[in-house]
Length: 357
Ligand SMILES: NC(=O)c1ccc[n+]([C@@H]2O[C@H](COP(=O)([O-])OP(=O)(O)OC[C@H]3O[C@@H](n4cnc5c(N)ncnc54)[C@H](O)[C@@H]3O)[C@@H](O)[C@H]2O)c1
Image 1 (cartoon, rainbow, N blue to C red):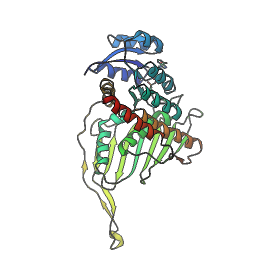
Image 2 (cartoon, rainbow, N blue to C red):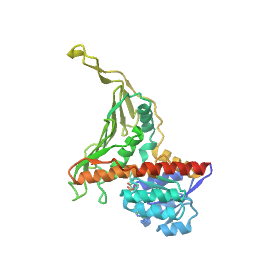
Image 3 (cartoon, helix red, strand yellow):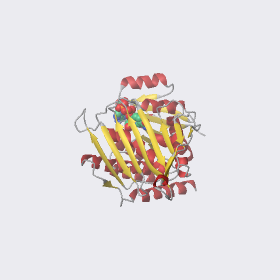
Image 4 (tube, rainbow, N blue to C red):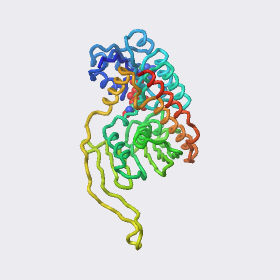
């Protein structure tokens, strides 16, 4: 594959990792980066040979010979920077959350399609080998009918001042759940509390309800004694637990379930099975590298990203509804009736097929 010439915007705590991955990938030529902080610009030029660091996006766009832009600056900058990059005809990879509202997400999705640009959103867990395995287990019916899913993304971590725990963390859990289930929720409800900074929720409990009775519950917090990153899936045949903090053996499948029986007597009405626990071998490849490589493949081969703009929009739609619920003490907010992103997704499908033809 030819080497894709990339420029990265934003080299903060996460952006540095993103820059490092692109620098290390053989299919990428990391040409430039853009960062407001002078010390980080100097560090980038020192660590990554051949990379030129710019102080503004305009300088990078005029000075560097790049074809794709990776945006890892704060969420509030995503919309203007993606827009600017698409209008300058670059392919774009933007970190989560795609945008801070549905209107902006829709506009960028249409702009990307109209200009035939690759537009990918950094839904990291969609590239995690364990999530891929869980998706296969669900889609193949190995877990049976899915009853419910719950995730925990908590630790005593970086307390952000520009977004709450919902917008900071939930894009991961929501995109993971949608990717695994392949269906969208019909309503959401969220409750949370701001303890440290007024109006910025540190803790959020978010619930998603799906048409087929599946429930998902997401616990988010940067105010917790434990670093926990778990996903538990309970099905009618088996159960699975994904522990992303574990160094090895991240996935366990429990051959256990409870099934209602044709009752002869009360004692026989429900059968509970406690079976073996299986620990499948799953690739230990770094999810961020897999995600960055996927973007390079899409740029080089002109293919549609797995986590494209339509996927970004689906997640922002849920986040926006959850925020509305959060502001109204957890009232359920419906997600029916807006088929715009399905229609847009189909348009994007047609557009990519036409490009490949
Ligand atoms: N995928 C993940 O797992 C993951 C994890 C953490 C953060 N993120 C996302 O990555 C993005 C960055 O997060 P972070 O933790 O690195 O934030 P950060 O605040 O640590 O860093 C942001 C950097 O962007 C720079 N910046 C801001 N505006 C800029 C501009 N106009 N041009 C150039 N540089 C600019 C800042 O100087 C800063 O260095 C956010 O969107 C965040 O949600 C994703």
